[in-house]
Length: 358
Image (tube, rainbow, N blue to C red):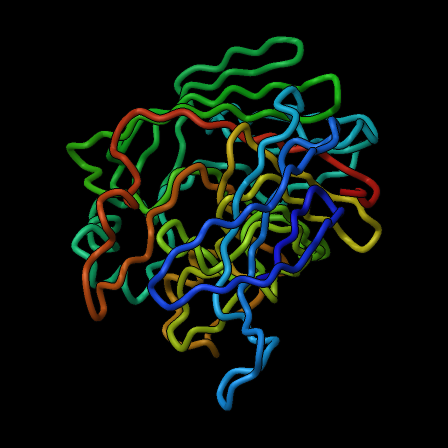
């Protein structure tokens, strides 16, 4: 058995021989792990390999693994980097969405930041009783925001918004509170109340927007480096990963939602110079950044129909439904559905200029 713990980029590892018969249990003493005061949490990784090679399995083949979160200094409440320039934001007076976010006058957004309740249907979603049919019936695949009221203060703006489908039906009410902090970060606090007479199921609850595809360098602390969903968490371990929108996207035969990452602590999307946006929340969240729009993925039936538009699509999700096994088995289990009730969540968007040492 091998084990190591990671905190940021630091690793402490050791190997230990374990004698345990199949279906038996034993106790293992790993010793005390003292974390530095500068560490918010660390991750104990355990990996099981064979002592001796067999005809089918060599000594480096990982037979099993597990991971445990070790709490650190709870007073460390943010991962956000220090201020790198002057931040300004604009809230649209018709939609209440965050329509502009600039760093030293340079625009970082290609489209406004809006509420997101839908995902391009997976094969399982199309067969799931709580899936895509209900989402489309409620019109969650084509939403607009209508401003009801706007209150502006020196460093914050509050927007009360109706969320409408393409038929003009109100699928819910949302409040967005935008706060500019002294570090130059914009905190977006969102509260959403769905109208359950129309909305019978939601794919996700979060924010979405697009950025220029020059922003193609992704790093994040979360599960990976493969797609994970709330009912597929064990397929990825929490670690610092570096990837691109292209690598996050998986070319399924039928285009569909893909690239999700769960248990994300922070994420950063930058261009080659290190300029871009840093994302975090007050709780672990879900993330995807891919090179195609949701509209295109929902419309396309074959991968040759996927056309790039010069932008990448960002999803920051507080909640997202699992993917289940409806094509060949049970639907998404109840504990992995998005609750149909009033919920609040927050994300922080922090403009950055240089690479971060995390």
